[in-house]
Figure 1 (tube, one colour):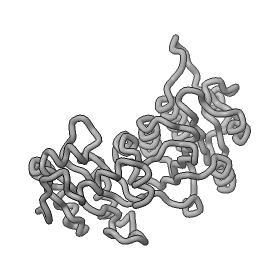
Figure 2: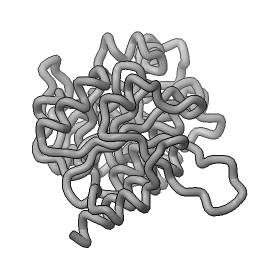
Figure 3: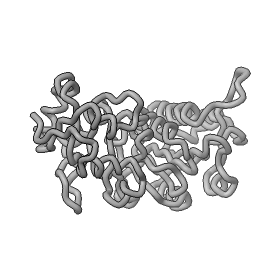
Figure 4: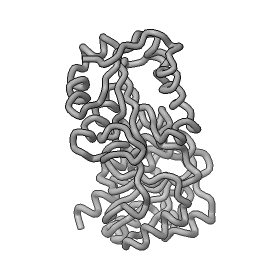
Length: 283
């Protein structure tokens, strides 16, 4: 089942994979790590569906370059081994010490995939009914959760602006729970360009802001969420800069009916995205 077995953390191959934990090496190689059976399963499912295509710099046609797993994980997740074999992705058995070296979690789940970047240019995004734009979002866990929520709400694209966290950060990939492989993700564009693109495809663009003048439910009741919509979400601590809000159709706040001071970014994003999805389906 395994093409090679690695037992030493000093192996140059293992050191090369481990370096992908750092953004500089990820960008240079245009590869990242998907850790855990859920992330690896979704990456391989995208491979089977032919969603990734062949990278111009080589590697597997699936976008999954190789898989590393412990013997125990191979037995427990035989479906992953079979899926890798189906798309000619090498699966390497590794010792527990090597897995601990590769993993970015305290308690590794025993399986990691090396994947090629999956982001697409903004110009390649097709029709947009619902979009999420992450502007100045720095926490990778929050960013990954918003990506997962946007996927669940049926969004057509998630845009990480040039001021936001790297979506290939290990914590972000894990928090996305495989959604990174499900929908178009755009990386590194200025927020003004993202807003211009959304307007160009006929979308209203709203800024989610806790101090926004308009109430989310009032905006929904007015019909302003019935057509194509893009949401801009800001920094976890200080929200969106005024100049970013000025680019949009206005700042919208999620109403708070109880005593909580505010909602965190991921929760507010979930409410905005699902409220919009509901309105669009009703209309």
